Image (cartoon, rainbow, N blue to C red; front, side, top):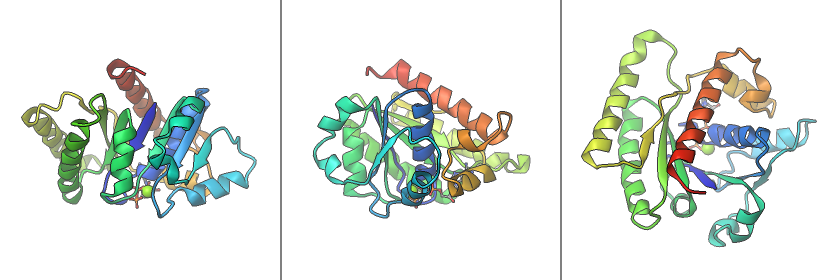
Amino acid sequence: MIISICNEKGGSGKSTLAVNLSLRLAEDGDSVLLFDSDPQRSTEVFIDIRNSSNLKQNFKHSFDINLLNNNFNNELNRYDAIIIDTGGRDSKEMRKAMLLSDVIIIPTIASQYDVSVLDHMLNVYKEVKSINKNIILLILINRVSPNPFLIKELNNLIDYIHEKKETYCLNDVFLLESVLYERQAYKRAVIEGKSICEFCDKNDKALMDFEKFYQEALQTIKNNIEI
Ligand SMILES: Nc1ncnc2c1ncn2[C@@H]1O[C@H](COP(=O)(O)OP(=O)(O)OP(=O)(O)O)[C@@H](O)[C@H]1O
Ligand SMILES: [Mg+2]
């Protein structure tokens, strides 16, 4: 299975999600390749810190852009999951990654700027879908403010996505019910080269959010694609 994490809006949490999803799948026993297709190598610092620590080296990573051109043919047989992190712009690499994927995850933030980019991402997705017909899209709302006074922004985004889904008949687009809140733990974990699961205590809210997202994403994938 190939999962690409895409959003041309910078800072929406793609690399953080790619790293955490890779490590969580590895924890479940999957053999995982984290492939960073961003020329800025967003995951490099994390990988370097991790490699120089005594944490489990339980997943592989690659920055080798040739993998995208070779369609991952060799790689696919070696791994249960390939997670592709993409850069914060509409690029050749992002589109190639989408064309090769079974699943796209778009992490998006509930702000006006992010919403207009999301609209463009949905158009890119529709173009990709016309070629890669079995693909599905999961939208994850990320970095939600835990401040209850800001719930309106979240609700506006949810309404907007539902409206788009209906207008464009996007039956293969799933807005995940679980959201990831803005939690300091994500930033602090990266500094130690750890996933959110390795960094947090069992009852930490950040871990509970992530676990809820992970289980819902897996179930949605299982129910909607044939691997
Ligand atoms: N749920 C979250 N809570 C708090 N901080 C977060 C969360 N998700 C991501 N971040 C932080 O937001 C910043 C941007 O995240 P990240 O680098 O993953 O975004 P990106 O989409 O990969 O950006 P780019 O487009 O530049 O590659 C980082 O400092 C990261 O630690
Ligand atoms: Mg990134």
